[in-house]
Image (cartoon, rainbow, N blue to C red; front, side):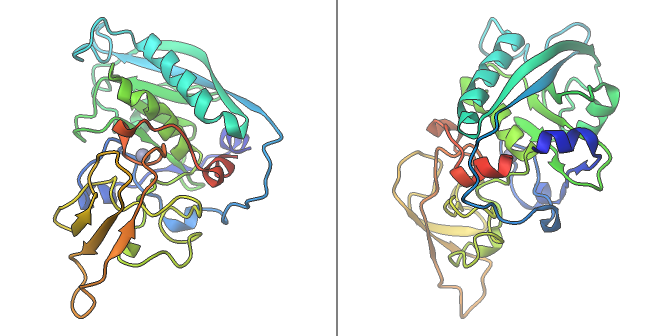
Length: 291
Ligand SMILES: [Zn+2]
């Protein structure tokens, strides 16, 4: 079980290079390098063992102000938001027999961290719990506008563990953010990871894209279309219709620049960016990778 590995190892990290390559999406977590990842998930692993994992929530305050105080929806209640997010996580992780519970709530005063959700390391260094997953509820990610969460992928070379952050918001669309960030914590990639293969169908789903074979290629949810990289036909935007879209990659030079690939992403997959489409599940192979 990864959590037990996480507790006793020191290995997490995150990269920042992708932030500069693509417009920022709602999750600031950046792709890990390929060597981090283990072998493809077997399709035969049953979920016979159940796990109940503690989460220690740190609510970062500034001069006594709660995170999310400027959100539109009032009254704002971060503890209720946390409970909603846990209930959601327990629903979507239930098929893998994984559940979460809040082991503690701690209010931590820090004006420097209040709007600094990007800096997971600083949050972790300020305060953490070695016996739980550490989740920090911050007011904002001022270095990354639009970001709603950030997590750290496991890596043996990174000297902290167990940490992720989520922004404080009262927007119900973001109840899924905790589950999404926990997915990264368990080493899942975004469904749109691996843009190098966009104009060709995946030939090795265990090594290309998100390295998960039962999630369809998703060229859409990280950016939408059209944009500076792609031209599109069909439905390539962030709406929730199931119409496939055709994408041509503008970076491809002649004579191959007329190649197109058809995409029909899973717009309810929690590791996508289709936040408004009622995200409600992981794929079976994603669930297995969580273990
Ligand atoms: Zn993410």
